[in-house]
Image (cartoon, rainbow, N blue to C red; front, side, top):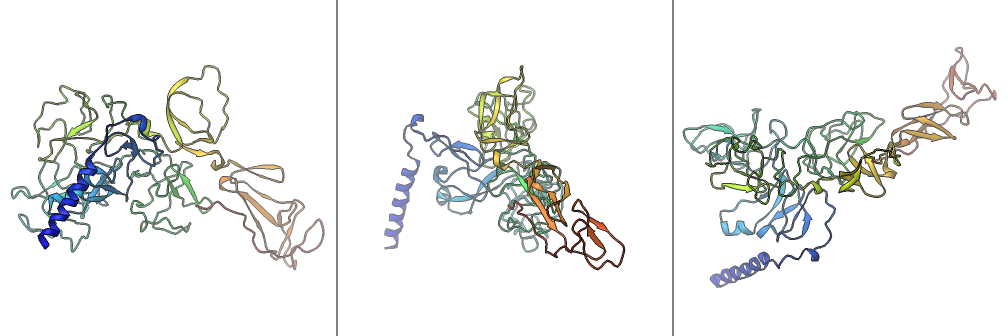
Length: 474
C-alpha cells in the first residue's frame, strides 16, 4: 500500500514537472506589456516575456524557476534537503547576497572560500576544532560564510585539514540603486537636503512603524525603500522634518545588448555563486585573461567573447561558469520613468516644473525620462503634487522654508514654514510680564504687569492652547 502511494506521488510530481517545464514557442507579440517593476525587469521562466524580478522576502525558485528569479544583489535561499530530486522542486525566499561593510550582517549562502575551499559546518569540530559555535553565535548557519568576530570580511573554517580558515568572496552591496531602490543595501545615511537619518530601530524624534522587526533590510540609519516609495528614503533626526528622499545615484553599470561594453562591478552569478578573479587560475583554469582582454578587471562580470550576456567563472569547483544578472539600461530607470534614446537635456524638476529650454539645448539625449505628471526630485521621479515646497503661502504673502512670523490678525500667534510648504502655527498662552505689540509679536514689559495686554486694543487676550496645523506624515 505504501509503495503504491509513493509510486502515485512520483507519477503526479513527474507529470507536474513535465507541465512546468513545457514552454510554448515564444511569440513576442503575444506577451503582455512590459510591467512597471520595483526592481529589475527579467525574462519569465520560459525566457520569452518580460516579468518583474522578485524582491527581498518574496518567493522564488521552483522547477525551472517557475516561482520567479531574484533581483540583483539577492539570492534564492531554499531549505536544504538531502534529496536532490526534491531540491529540484524546492521554492525559496529572496535574500541579500551581498555584504554591508565587514559583513557582520551578512546572512547569505556562500559556502566556499575565495580560494575555492568548501566551508566546514559551524556545528562541526572536524577537521578543525573551534569555539565559534551556533550556540554562541545564532547567525552561524550550516557552513555559510559569516563574520561573528569582527574580522575584516566574512570567512569560514575549511574542510581541508591543512588550511584552518579563509575569507569568502562575498561582493559588497552596490552603492547605487536599481529602479526605486528596493534592493539597495548601501550605507548612505543622509537625505538629499543634508538631514542626518534617524536609526530605524529608534522612535526619536519621530515615532513610526517601519521597523527592522518588520523589514530586516533596515540597518542602522542607512537609507532604504521598504514600502514602495519612488526612491530610497529615511526618517530624519530633525524634529521639524519627518522624512526625506536620499540622493542615491542609479546604477550606471547597466548593460546594453549582450553587455560587451559593460564595465560595472557585479561579481556574483545569477545563482549566487561568487566570481573567480580573471587573473586567477583557481579553481578553474582558462584562457580569458586580462592580458588578452584588458576589460577583465578583478572578478567583475564581463562578456569578452560574444556570449548572450555578461558572465564569469565561479569560485565553486563544481560550477565552472555562470551568467550574471545585470539589468539592461532600459530597466535601470527609477520608478515612474522610462528609457528613451531621444530625450532632452532640459528636464522638468520640482524646482522648475516647466523649464524653458534655451536655444542650443541638446535633444536626442538617451536616458531616463519622467512619465507625464511626474518631475525630477534629485534622482527620482515624483508626482508633481508630491514636490516638497520651497516656500509657504499665508495671508497673501510668501514665506521661505524655516522662516517664522507673527500673525497680525491673531495676536500672540507665531507661525513657521515647515517641510513640504506646511504652515505650523502656535498661539502662545499669556505669560506674566509680556504683552502683544502692534505687529502681533510678544514684547517684554516691566515686572508686575498682571496679564497679557494687547497694546492696540488695551484689553486682555484670551488664553488658548497650541494649535498645530497638519503635518505630512509617512
